Length: 280
Length: 213
Picture 1 (cartoon, chains in turn orange, blue):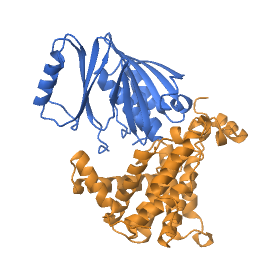
Picture 2: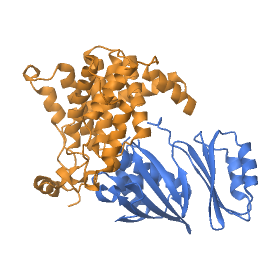
Picture 3: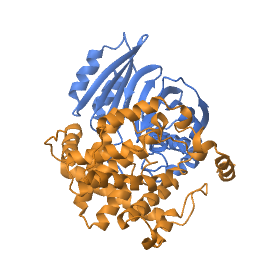
Picture 4: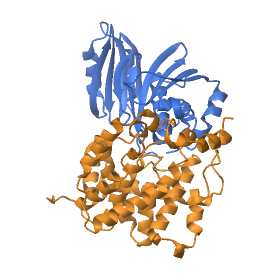
């Protein structure tokens, strides 16, 4: 397979942003650093706040992963921390707390979870973390242009799938992998979440969304590890995004953010959302 | 942003915000028709709250967004809301807003594309495209009474950066749209444009740069 001699994805993103908006790299980087702080705050506030969401369905799970005996887990410390942060952000989101959409609010735990956990556990600089976010933005721009971030249009593959791909590329850049291997990590991540439905119970952004972010971040780090080990996706990233769009065209509206199919119409979902409906 | 959804909360807020600026003021009455997924999950996704917040002038990162209903009530805003089917050709996250203020009324249709991106796709039955990444200057005029070249002359005097222009017609009315990179417009020139003979209304919709926190 050809390897193209290109700069880092972060550099390409900075150049594109300057061409489009006139904003210089220093300003864009400073801005990303601010977003990283909001991501971190939302993860910590989400975990520290013991209050359940208005529906009562969300709250307390980030704490559980923080407090569990880590020596008993299969997860490495960096993965465990990523899950903790990821769920923490989503618990904040369910309470209408301020978060950074990455690329959406329903998938806003995955990128922060991955970048913050890797930065902390591997003692990386804020600059490296910002490089990670810019890399994620590059992958996101491609998905936005040839695909979509809308679960109403393409199901959760376009949200958690997209976010997981972005996070896989981000941590790959942070660990010094080439642009080509970062993009490969993104392909591996997205490819293995194709067909994921958006069936939110009660029409909320809570179940299965919160825990799905916890799973999605582990998925992203795994994709990066596989790419690091030299495992290569047979289908290149752009075509995986096209496959996502193709699959979306076969998905009925019941699986695309209408709460009319899948988990949303299970007997348990109907029972618990009736009990917790904020309008009843 | 404040969620829980970038498409159904932040994007919805942005559509409301842009519609408020097309009207030129906070509406006294808002008829909100929610299409597709918007119509199915608006309660759990706080879409209605977000649209009302946008109509009040709030932006997606405003931490007061959850209080939009209360604030609208304080102002005495009349709100009618329903879930509708506006046609399968439309994006599943689409809302049609009819806003009224002091005898002026506009019907504005917007779609929320995901991740907070939105498009305003129709204003008063005229198909147009405001994508929200840039500011929008809108001038609505009687096609025969107002020559386009007068508008264009004033446009070239603007210190702001022009990105794109389009003019759309509907029977004897035209809607001129200029996309501008900056979030503000020269007030003097804008007032001149609004006062030209044949112009029915002019609006400036400032972009909410995603750099606002």
